Amino acid sequence: MTQAVHRQPLGLRVLSSGFLIFWCIVAAFPIFWITVMSFKSPVDAFDGNAANVIFGPATLAAGKGISILDILVYLALAIWMFRRIARMLPDMVLSYSPQGRQWLGWLIGAAVTGLVVVVTFFALLPAVLNVLNPLVGPLGRDVWGFTTEHYQTVWVDRGFFRNFQNSLIVTLGVVTVSLTVGTLAGYGLARSGSTLAFWILIIALVFRALPHSVLVAGYLPVFINSAEILRPILGDAAPTLYGKPVAVIAVLVAINQPFTIWMLRSFFQNIPAELDEAARVDGCNHFQAFRRVIMPVMWPGVITTGLFSFLLAYNDFLVTSLLLDAQNQTMVPAIAGMFNRETTTTDQVVAVAAAVSITAPLFILVMVFQRQIVSGLTAGAVKG
Image: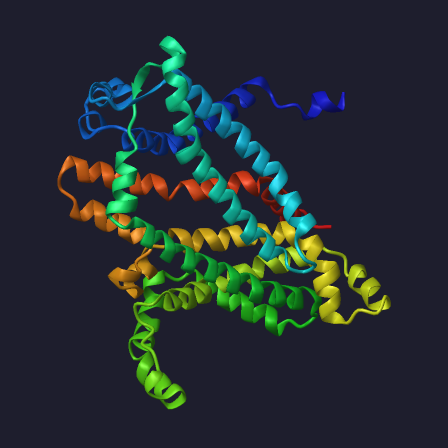
């Protein structure tokens, strides 16, 4: 009887499901389409016929394609590998990381996972399939136009790997500083009865809502004149911070830190204060109670907050384009420059391949941390 009362009417379920399906299609279609384009020759990529873009007849006619066996093996292995990574990596990190150093375990785990994926899909599988395809008859014959030459062009010939390294430096710097300061400040605010710090945080959140261009304009003269400002302290070795990743890290942390502290404060408030008291009774001081008792419980919230910080730094365009020079440019402004600079269809497909490349780490993060993200969002949404 209770289930019947709470059950949604059929019309409402159909409407909500239909809207959700429609939204998923609208959101996923651009990613799907540019991904397909990036593996085709320029003739197929910009063909007016959608079927030619998908199947790539001109690409296939040029001797660049994959077989049914290739498709089945790659698809099956990708699904199996990502599911195994999502299930095993978090447990292995928590089991084998030194006490209080889970961040080191995540760094090592992410690096090893990325290396395994790259070696498996781009070195081992092509070599194995080149041997198997001639042996399986029709299943080994190329049926779908497919080429990875645009990715090779953008990553090797165009030096996009340097932009990836710069993005990695900026992103890791922002996440590390934001979470280090945010966890300590969030814990202090959650356990403090002071209203002054709370209202200061509210004011900081108001500034967080301002356009980034306004905030960057205030930081810009400081970084340009940083050598003169630091010369009394560092002497002639004083560096100019403008154009360096450290400038972007400082600005993005300053912009995002109030939001990070607010999120972590909400997560800490959901942890009973009795845990702190029990740890103090067992002989821990405040910091030991925080590190040994509270933080192990807080990992889902920390990972969820870290993901938001990662997305801010990884996807930022305005701050990085204004504060970094051409040699230290991150991936997002570098891709924008490719689209604005390139004129031929081949160059445009190369730029599309670069745009597709930056989505891969985001999918891997969501796949690996899906359980922690769901757990963290649930913990932050439910009070008790």
